[in-house]
Image (cartoon, rainbow, N blue to C red; front, side):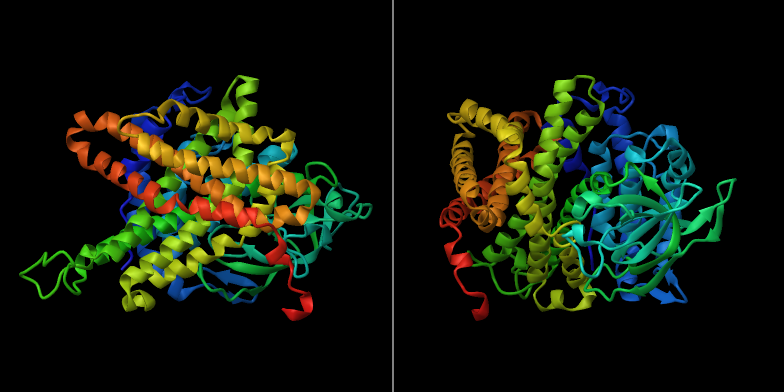
Length: 596
């Protein structure tokens, strides 16, 4: 049985203690976003996740989606869940009030996203992609398109998709073939085929708005010739209702390993009517507004699955009795002790806990930077926040999903044979988590983005937003009487990251394959150091608060214990990663193609 209780105490710790500065209410437009308001929002989101979304997660996986005559039916339980979700205003929480949104900050929205993903990852894709489409249209579309489409996306009566991938091109979008022919009325005829389109067709909303990448007749070759078009499933009437069916059809559903309640579609566009979003041949840049948002959200998917896997594994480990504790019997009245007493089970659970709480802390830092970048009235402050989020986006996407999948597998292992069968829901978490390492750019692509784009930008300008605060923290606290050992461990790992950065920058300039061969290890090293920084800061706060904690003493004690576990048992991996990076590309690239 999947177990989930929203980790609200830890969420409040991240929002109000770990990343308390600047206060959300101090940012322009957020004066009313007080801790009390945020607490009430998160409490209601927790009820939705625990009472509505979690109960239909396993059922949605078993039922899946069906396609009949071009119409996709989602799992039956999703209809009530989506109606409840939409009626509760959850589609609107992070949208502009000018289009009917609630205008809440990303710092809050990402925590709500985590709860949704933790309890029903397949369901989360429907509103998640809609919000991404909203962001792209809001940033790049004409005022007429915004007024016609955004209110319906915000209130959830319409949904959105992103249509990029074609059968012959995924990552290399420069090869896409979908065409856009201009019409006399200013619209375009879109013709082509797309695959792997999440939420491409379904019966949850009355209309679906596709953002489609295509080529104009005069488009230059490659990625510089891509434009973005808004293509609705139904053409809206003058009064804003769904009108005639457009030339858009779902031709097949993908048969997937996981997220079976999410409709992943093959889509055909046959002279479908669409409208240009943004400038001609600038579609890829416009689409990246949506893709970068989605990459951060996919990272949150990994975190959400990890949290449910952890809680489910803990619940099982408390109840399952097998063997006796190595230090002596703990439950003499029972035939055996709970497996929670065994060191290896503890190792798995502590690893999962260190991953989830560390990733939540890091996502809180990035989310706060998103809010600053959007709302600060100081140009330099905004620019610094934008640099930080640009640097951390591939790390959040890849690290969180890698660790989320690892956590799901550890949770299954805790369950033993019972994890491998459907009854406990653990194998579903493993299957669902796996896609997050692939879509929105595979994790290998995220690593290449980090070393190939983010590191060289402005001669390492982006790195300063991370390196400087970490270096300052280590210098100021290396002799701390209680924190010193942790800080020294962080310092060693940070030193490895600095050496690896220099190694990649030096070798990569002479030979791009050197950077490419080290990219995945480098991203993991960067991510582990980032989590280490979060754990060191969390431990410092816990030490300060513990003497007067009263009812929260257990919470802060657990922070300290988990921080120590992370620093002693996880962060030392940084040394091995540095060694692998320094070994160069030779062992990776030496084997002739014919011998594979």
